[in-house]
Every structure is written in C-alpha cells, then in structure tokens.
Length: 159
Image 1 (spheres, rainbow, N blue to C red):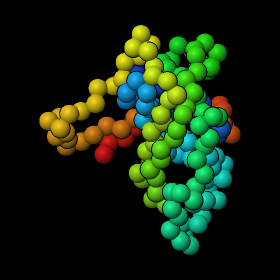
Image 2: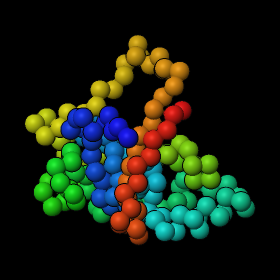
Image 3: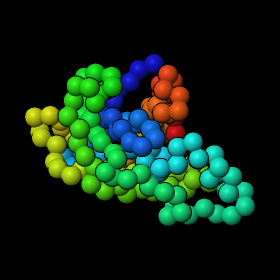
Image 4: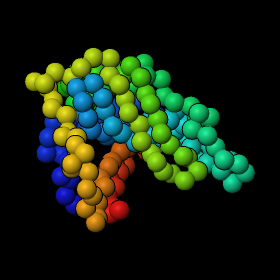
C-alpha cells in the first residue's frame, strides 16, 4: 500500500477527546480533516446513528469536540507525536457532516497561531484553472480509535 501524502510536512496528526486522526495543513493556520474525528461522539456514534432510521439528524445536534481539548502535531517524527513534537492548540472547529449518510465528512480546524514556514508548508491548493477533475480520484486517510488503540486503520479507495 502506497501513502503518497506522507511525502511532505503538510501531513498532520490530530489528538482529541476521542480519536487520534490525520489531516492536511491547507494554510499556515488551517487543517483539513474528517468531521467524525472531531464530532465528540466516539463510542456513542453508533447510538447517534440509530436515530437516522427514525428521523433526520442535523449536524448541529451532534456535539463537537472542544477546541481546548484538541491539538495538532505537524509531520510524523515519532509515534505518538506528542512525545517529540510541539502541540499546536486549536482555536475553532468547523464541521460539515451528515451522520446518516456518512458524507460529507469534512472539518476544518483553525489553529490558535500560524505554523511557521520552517516547520511546515501547506499542501498546494488548486486554483480555478486547476479544478478540472480526473475521471478517477484516489482517496486516502487513516486514524486510530482510542477505544482500540492497537488498531491503526488506513483507508483508501477510488471515487
């Protein structure tokens, strides 16, 4: 299994209340990750999803992790990153998620301070001219559920 996104220092680890997840630095102050990594549900996710069969669940009904309990670590110098890298505290968490359909599953974390350019360079974001999509896209992600720390999960697929 290849992990093409591991090439740069824009790869980040997010340590929160429930999950240890990954993301990408998209500006000196913003991180793109999965919404389920910061939804504050953890082991209660299945219980919340049961409500989907009864009624539509709004994203605002799902608790969001507290920014004060969430840190971002840049790069992959050690495991766990908290043992050898400085934490970048999170100022705000913006989520976009439909828990009943598992998509979109996107969150943006705003850091309290900019990440130094000496520490990391954000991923290159496309311009309008670059937005022509290829016929097939590769999606890659990974994470670890704190309830099952021994299982490091990597997901990849084509869209």
